[in-house]
Image (cartoon, rainbow, N blue to C red):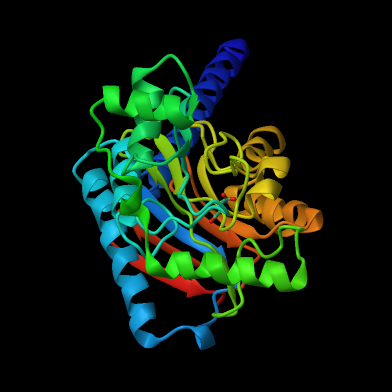
Length: 356
Ligand code: ASP
């Protein structure tokens, strides 16, 4: 009888333990469901270049024009994502709006080379497949980000440059323009002022490349976008005219996968803007992803270390925008300002220009 009661007691104990286990499991499941439901369905972040963008050098009209264009651009991507479109489409179409605006150094409004031409660079990356496309030094493709995407999806290659890239763009039926399309008075004047300064100061170290002595402003007007879509796919893209007064077919970081652009569904999507040479040497976009992957850092921590410590220690200036696989968005820069905006799945829009 004693043996039987012991067995019976044991059975009850075992049964109740199982129940505790089950309820623990249930509460674990509940916790993760709660976390999932808090995770945004999608997210989008953009930049229109970083630099010494100071309020004292800005007119209210100009500031309003930048804000309006940033909002117009990000809303295009937001609508695509809201309607279940892909992050790649959102990135491409958002960048198109900024490429078509003379306010930014990309597409119309691209800066001038030393030879008084406009040579454009762009790249795009799909975080799901790790496929990527880039174009460098094109002079007649209206929207270089479309060319980068065509390179990714319609060619065997990752990066095409110069005449070959232009031939490919034509074959793909992309919109071609006369090189004069990219001419803007402001950018042309900037080039002349920089050339004059070079003559008088014999400054050939490239430091005048982004600095306009007239507006006392040095800025990188590249445009970029990073997005997460409803299917959990990340994408990033970047488009630029490069740096004023660039020579000898110089190519910056914008079309370099891992420097100007990187996307990986396992970590994050990043687009850079800044002094391209440093961004190439520091492999900025990939380094942020690698820090997350190998060190388990958050996007915020990884971005801070790469921009504020590693890039800054090298002497590089600029910034990034990025979104991680959970929809967290980051805008990190070590300059006085960066044209930037974010939009959440709730439709909350934030636009920034200056540091604070
Ligand atoms: N990163 C670009 C380049 O070096 C410039 C920019 O961001 O505006 O070509």
